[in-house]
Length: 402
Length: 64
Image: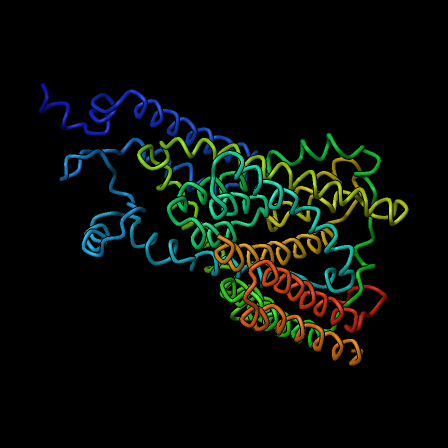
């Protein structure tokens, strides 16, 4: 009978391990199925969440007893550091090469940033630097306030900063900060960060409706009123900004280099590189990211008490950033005497391009003629740069302070 | 392109970089190090914003 059960190790391990672990596995399988369903219904963005949901289902169903006698999977072993074990894992685990060579060194974050740089239009940011930065700074409320809250809840300074970075709503930055400041929490923070960032598409519209009256949401803004900036000057600014920011925050220099390289390729209109970065690189990296994140969401990796704390702190960070961004949007609306749609505030949360799409959709729902996407993308870019600066300050300064 | 803004911005950003990256090496007091670093960061970023004011903006719609 025992031999019969061992033929079906996925089920066998469900009954032979602890009850707690079995329940977490079932919960994660159910969550994976829910993600797939919500992607099918177009409620969630399928770009990351579809491969992530499939990965979650497979990794938690496909648990088996390994040679060492422990329950594990053949997907990925993120906590290995010993070279001999790592070599073995690279030969055995299906996602291990992707995780080791692209994920755990931040390469995937940089590749995504190159793609984002190519699709980013920095005209609005350069035309209205102060309002854009005001929106972006407001949208960093969660990044700043979650840090003391996390420390009060028992996390140390570096761990608190790593989870607070979720409030910056920028996946590559979350990967980067947790990799440098809290490597032991890298996996749960990254997984939680990306899970929540993907959920902003479903959650922020409700926050927007609660905080901004419909008449304000429907304010139309002329997309043709955004001034044109000569490509040569955008390129020159990108080079100077890359130089200054890299000198200022060397630890975050790979991210700055990736982003501004993308911007430079766009402004120089290097067509073949544009196609390469926006197609295979951006979508390929996003697909790999979703799949690896799903593979990391196995019960043996996330079934830890600290994960519960990180779940609460992550959602708090994003909620506060959303509130801060909308608050800054409402302030901008007042300053402009009602000419600016306060929805731009939510786009200050730098989840490119999701929050800009959320702002446009909310405006469209209130007024069929309200086109605010070019402005919202400007606030989005300001958010990316502000988040990169805070990331640079956190990873550069906090190790010195602690 | 307003070259005056670019030059002022680059000088201010450069001063900020010196304050943030070089000066703390010559200061022994940690609190003062932190203050100098933060002032340097603020100056460097302010320099970038000043440069932005020197960028030419063509009104009258987006041709591209």
